[in-house]
Structures are given as structure tokens and as C-alpha cells.
Length: 189
Image 1 (cartoon, one colour):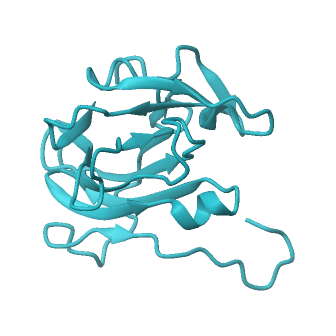
Image 2: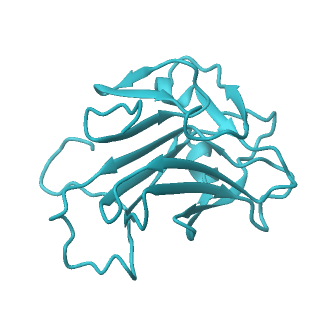
């Protein structure tokens, strides 16, 4: 894999960043090798993780979809995680609402409004099988986006062991994280 931050066989991308940053021993690299469109912004807030201080946004209202493309191994399973922190990068007070598309299929609607109101970032995760030698992760305008701009703070694409989630027919389904719970412990995950 070319130029990936491969501590855990995958890609750890600092969207909109110009330098490598490290979070929890993972090295995130700038996103310029994986997308050629969009604009970048910096969030000037001191208590943010380094991956949340930059973002890439897509102001072109003439285009509907904006993609990141990663070289992958056909038929392998991948955990894709997208991370968002609005930070009022566009001078507004309300985060835009838009879609996520993976491998050409709508994955979910991104609505970070509730998390952002609490001062939190938002993340989405999905497990998919690659259908070819490239995996695309796209942000797309929808009926709620209006003239605002889809954006992304960080993106992770991690290769998974082939034995994980074997009962799932990935030709028909994907696994999406709904929530995480920690039973029996007192530590916050």
C-alpha cells in the first residue's frame, strides 16, 4: 500500500491536514494522495485532538458527490470509519447534513448537529468487502444539504482478518455500528 500509515494495515487520514499527526499511537497522514477536490479549513480550538483541528470541505454546489479512493485487495474485509467535527468552519452555527456512500452504495446520512451542540465530534463505522482493487468513500449532497458544504475531519480504512464476521453475506449486506457498550466495567470506551 503506497504511503499509508500502516501500523495496523490500513489508512489513517488527517483530512485537510498538511502534516502527519499522531493520536493514540496511530499516525494519520494528509489526505492529498486520496482525493483531488475540495477545500481545507483549520479549527482554532485548543482542546481538540489533532485530527479534529483540520478538515476538508466540498463547497462546489454543481457536483453532488466527492470521493476518497484507496488501493485495496479485492475481496478483503475493511472497517471504514469517518470522523466529523464541524467547528463552525464555514461561519455558520449549524453543521450541514449530507450522505455517505461507500463502494457506490449509500451508507448513511451524516447529521452531526446533536453531537456538535454538546461539543463532541461524530463518527460512523461500517464493515464492507471490497469489490475491486479500489475502495471509494464518498460524501454526497442530499435534499438537506442546501448550499452548505459536506465536510470530513478524519478517515480510517482498516484491513480486517478474513475470519471476522464470517456469518455475514457481504455480497448483500454491510455491518454498521449502531452503538458501543461496555458491560461489566467502569472505564469509558
